[in-house]
Image 1 (cartoon, rainbow, N blue to C red):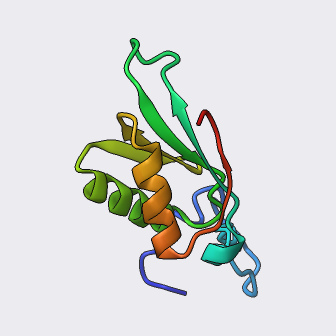
Image 2: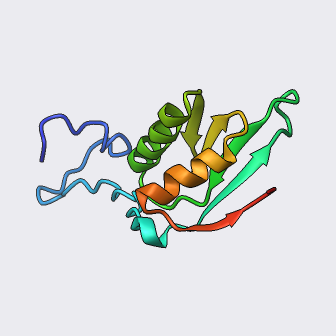
Image 3: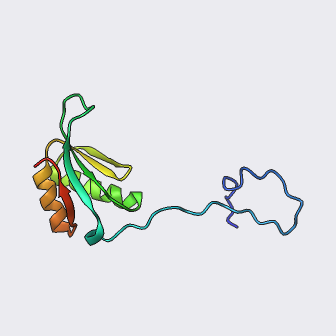
Length: 116
């Protein structure tokens, strides 16, 4: 057992069993699919955003760190802000064509380009 595991066993108060082992929850981080198997969709969205346009990249399957890395790549290459969460990347502005080129150069296969 690691030294600082008290957060993993918050629900267990006391056990009299000398052979008792604390069970922690398994990590449910999904494996990131390879670039060729990602079914990404690019769309323009302006609903619930005060009339401002954003480019949505949806359909990413994988760990949050990989999603953040792809989001950072897209935002820096487009030179704008945005966010990456819940399997989708939001890039401020209409950058559908530029994002399409960037993703193809990186090796991603896109399933749909919505709104073109």
